[in-house]
Length: 224
Image (cartoon, rainbow, N blue to C red; front, top):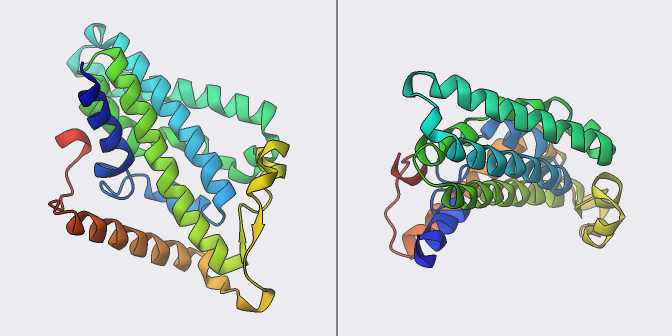
């Protein structure tokens, strides 16, 4: 594959076919864990690791997976990768692991990894599939972090609160206090705020696409 093709795959994952902003997949964790940018970043990176590994494995073994059993095999592969990520986070990022709780195992039921396995990894070579998994995961992380950041700033007046505690001391520089205590809107860190902010971010993404002359479509990953 040429560099242009890899660039297109990366751009699709990050923006054009972003799992949340374009395909509206993975909205359960989007609503649940975006009460802060720190939680959103941790959840996004965990999902990105699962997607990259799953895409690579499915692509490597795609010729040995029959059409009839592909879906349960894909789910088993995703479940194995989620279990590995779950164990690693429990061992090395335990505070974040406790905060995210059940939503790490629930990556298995997230439609986004399965959509990319079905539409891309099951049909394409390993290198392209790995690029697709990495950048689709990073696009998911980007969308989660933007939504989480907006909710946290308006709802708590902070940005990346407790980043050092949850992600490690090297992330201390991310922590910011942006608004005074009397300027917070508590609703933004409650469930209604998740729907409101996600809706506004979706509208913003579509306005940018329209300004660039792109057609708005709700198609699946890579035209699937």
